[in-house]
Image 1 (cartoon, protein in one colour):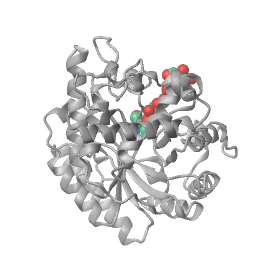
Image 2 (tube, rainbow, N blue to C red):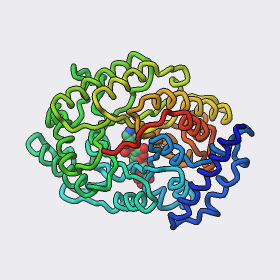
Image 3 (cartoon, protein in one colour):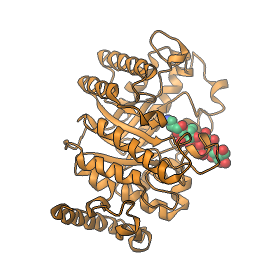
Length: 392
Ligand code: G3I
């Protein structure tokens, strides 16, 4: 083992803990005990002390941001999990709280209670706060279909963005302004999804949304967020082409889009994939002058083997292979996982295993112990080329 690396690692580790100790609210000693005794969670019997440094610290050393999505219910009810989040993450994404359904119980009433709680939590613990999402075809309130029509749609959308992005102006690192606007299955020549907004306003709804977001919060990085961009398959290739066309169109219109979010909900296909085409796509996106964020990474393990040790190894390999390719692109500024612990993940209900075993898609297990996937991500951060920490 490289002694210098170990010493440096220990120093960073202690610095990381020092920073945490200053954060108040949670007692570092009891809650984070397992991180102080790396040998108790060493999966291979061969982990250098450098790898015990929280991911937020490891990422920052390379000019990267590591963060995770979580929600009010989980963070406010489990102090151990909350402490783990603040320890590991430099950025927090509200999984639910800034979506239309959560924010707008009725057309003229906005409820920021939970969103504000999440923003304050991030702020108190020195985490950046990411907004998700201003425009999406899902999670719309029940009143939407009856109330919004082609006559009032633009005004409803503008009011939403001005109110929500305005409310958090200056406190948001980046906004997912538009989420998942491409659906090739909808068979339009421009690849756009037949989302309610498209049907009400036409393709310009995307430009309208970005312009409104820029006006409401000139400091936020404005992101177009998309899924299914990862594999070397014809389907993903077609989607990448459609996304690139959309981004080119937005840029040539002078629409203020600053970055692409790649969700990265990966599955067993990732085991075989070399992500070669994704790598070229990331260069193409960077050449448009855009930054890139991995926004929702996890590994859907419902079709992976039963044995949890075997499964964990495959999942870790997927994290490592994917992020090694993605972080090779210097325009990538952040890696966000969609959750942190297997205890709390949308996949438990949305993509459960047929054998009834709990899913294991994230970096920490249900007992909040780091898994091989955590070590894999740490290793990728360690090897990643250094970039300048990005500021808009
Ligand atoms: O809050 C209720 C709870 O009271 C009730 O007991 C429970 C019963 O099922 O439902 C709870 O609400 C659910 C909520 O998740 C919290 O678990 C909603 O029905 C459910 O629709 C919601 O799903 C979320 C989904 O987006 C829709 O908003 C997932 O948690 C969230 O992880 C998922 O996130 C999306 C991203 O926004 C966009 N990209 C894909 C990603 C995964 O689908």
